[in-house]
Length: 113
Length: 117
Image (cartoon, rainbow over all chains, first blue to last red; front, side, top):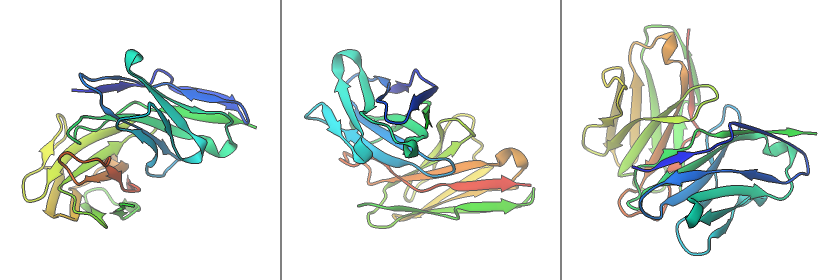
């Protein structure tokens, strides 16, 4: 079964600074990979997903993520963080059958003014 | 795009009552629905997987008699928390999937905040 780790529990960045949230997965084949954002008390919003093809994926709200097979990673990046980006971010992996969706533990992002 | 509707968004009730949460897929047939529970500042924990017309599959440690799941149609799954107690207070999120070799990720509802007094 696949698994996901997000090494950083909490990250604080200043508004306008760049951001990278780490995600590593364990799976025998190339999985489907996702990043979700959750604002306090809210559901999940899909930022971006990777199924195949170009390993650099563009998402909403100016986010992008890069799939690196050699590192089993799918890190999320944003060149300039806005205060409204403060939230919890979850990386997730799904197997090739469209099932067994597994979330990482999440990374809480705080943004300093 | 595909949308999953979850209702209610928030419920507060007394200890001992039963609470039903609905999860509907609005524009696709959800062969499979998933129920998650999220504790404060924690990740989502899969509780159970339900397939339309068959019994739900519960994850280890989840009481099936406590959390009743019914997936009666291809667009509706319900989670009933029976005889709820304060320790059942949590954020519950459902997810729906067309299933099979789908090119779409699971679609999530907006969650239900359950508070048991």
